[in-house]
Length: 134
Length: 209
Image 1 (cartoon, each protein chain N blue to C red):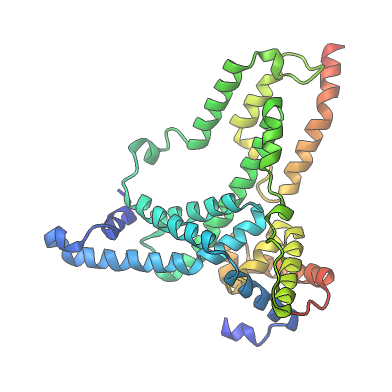
Image 2 (cartoon, rainbow over the protein chains, first blue to last red):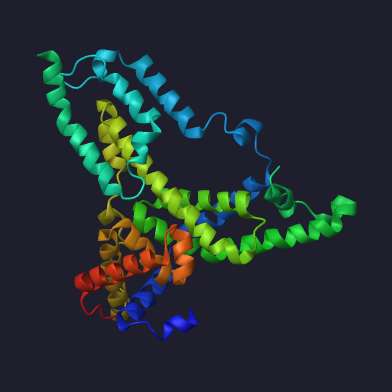
């Protein structure tokens, strides 16, 4: 870093000073939580991992998604999950959303592409519903 | 058991209790101590970087803790020189994962009308998170104003530009280390960094401190 310091612009020097100062302003509570988080991480890393986690048999996200979908289906009748005007079959989109890794990978490089896609889905939904009902 | 699990198990276990493995344990203990020191040296900066992207205190803390855990588990046996870019690469991925999860969670919650208000309440509110105004010296106020302006400007940057800027200027990584941490070429780092500086200059102007 020292070799780079000489090439820094005045703007960069100022922002570095402000950023460094911002670290000193982090409150004691947050520092304490970070300290605890570090010790927890080191202790957890010291514990042997469970075999099924090592093998990746049940990824945490997939398990959470399965539980969520199960709760949705158990506690809410299917017709209540539909937006107004939508036909049955759309709850499967919920399943797709949480189960399909490809849908998530749309955000792989730049987040805005995913948001554009999500917005397009939202705009297209009523039309699809109208087409299906008509 | 992973390599680090072997070495880190002595993080809490006195080497003297382990008899013939004393030499290995001493080495493992020193590595565990070194890792602890490394993580202590980066945790505040990592938190600031995570908070700039996630804009949520608890999420930022979770991201930092997850990155610490993954570094300890997967790369604890690497050389100490490798830890810094590896740690920030893991953190970058954790932040991205949390942003994805937040987006998906938002879409799912849209299907649950009863929970929508509750979710809205949980959304980070930058104004609510701002420090309460208290009488303080003028110099401190000026620094606070500069800090607030910089943080607001950073939030407006695209993710990659923000990463490049913070890794270079907050963590002090050089271009090569930043490229490793961001998982891209050095040329990309230079481009992202240049654009970040230009955007911040345009927004902050002279930026007197």
